[in-house]
Length: 147
Image 1: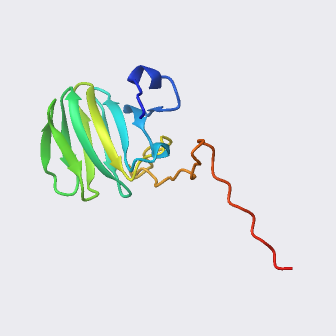
Image 2: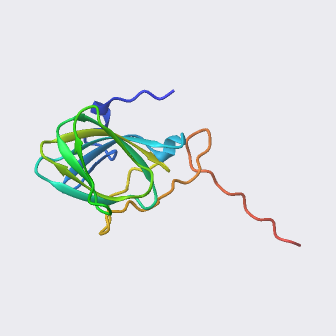
Image 3: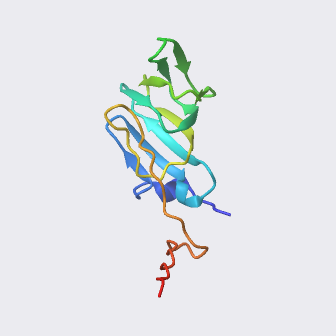
């Protein structure tokens, strides 16, 4: 069982900041549970263009107001507390934050914690090395040489 508070994450490598947002990564790929869980704040007055070409993301708004735009269709949706959206088709999208917008996000495959959006708004698909039960990276046994 893992128990972790947001206060433990703020100011550590699990808190990733960009120009328009800050994301606190509560669960990451290294926990090996098949998803990552993020507490993300998009800053008031900003616009963030994203495209998760390598991930499926579910987003649940818990604070603030904004607007989600499907960049492929032009369709717009109001974002406010209690609204969820699922990017199950790798949609190009933009989130306009009218106020600070705080969301809880789930990614599959899980993020490692090092991801930031590239020039296309994409998170690269990063992986974690396998770990042993002790939490140390697994070492591949040396190949036997034929004598």
